[in-house]
Image (tube, rainbow, N blue to C red; front, side, top):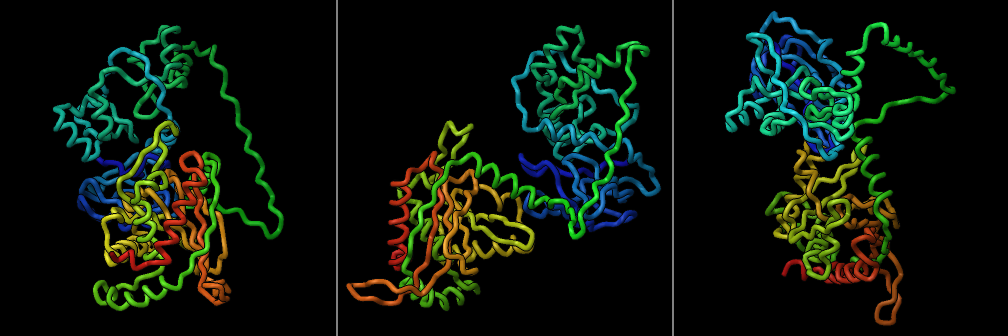
Length: 460
């Protein structure tokens, strides 16, 4: 029997994925573990492997299409086998819509057994089959929440709880109307019974003459665009950026501190270490590397721990980090990603150079893994190469701050009572005022400025 290939849910916030390219064509033989296609999940590209061996019978969603998570995108089966494409389309949208909602659950009766035809193969992911074996659970009894009843690992784990999931409103409606919840199929996240499911049961039990005809939906006429105007869809990356930046801007009360850094000594140090690090790593050390390491050293001071913290649990608790995972913003042709150098606090300068170049290269080629884009505790964004003199960077939440690096400009300054020309770089620190006050942010910048202007301390 043919099995579905679904758009995977690769992260808690992932709602949809864009198919970049199918690596296999219809009719191709595939083996378990073969790369089937490449997708874009939020702001990173991912290669999706085949979960079963067989023949790629049908591609339901083609290159360039944006598909909700858990929706069927293809079928794998035996050569010559037919598939019912129509029945697999649409249910995923309902699953996604309920994902963020976690209301208190009402008690209910035991879950009804799953009805499957004799000899019908249970549709299940490999992870679900392993979980069922580990928990000694019969997969035939597990309701699947995926397309066409596909069983996921979470379905197996949830099956240990006998009662079906039900929203408080649906539970009250069922009680008042005398509806047995064991007969109701939930359309919410992981099979949760929602208000709409109770209404559907109620409508189905009405006599035919009592059912009102469905209203005919009139299609709105196509909007005529003015000459020279084009409408395009937002890419998955732009949607993710839009959502993240809007959330950050609207939830965090921020302020920005601006400082001038004399780059004379840092430029001299870079010149000194350029060749030795190149010989050791084959990579060129950049000012972003030196600044990233300096920021890391400064964040590890106990007095600056709130600059390396996150607000959690609806901003009711503060998560303090004893390590630094440094996010480095990388601009791409169609958007922005923030790859993360994990464990930066334990790295030497040459190790930081290697780690940062690795994730930046992956970001530029669209090969970042989800883990390489998550877990940052602080972020840096550098617009100096474009001549930017100052800007107000938006915090990459859940970080409490972000450092903006602007251009280095030859500037007249007074040194020891005399006017001289020095390379001065502007730095802009945007801070979440819920976690850090102005005085504490200023103290951080004073320490960072000292370290950048006396960079030999980085190597001690």
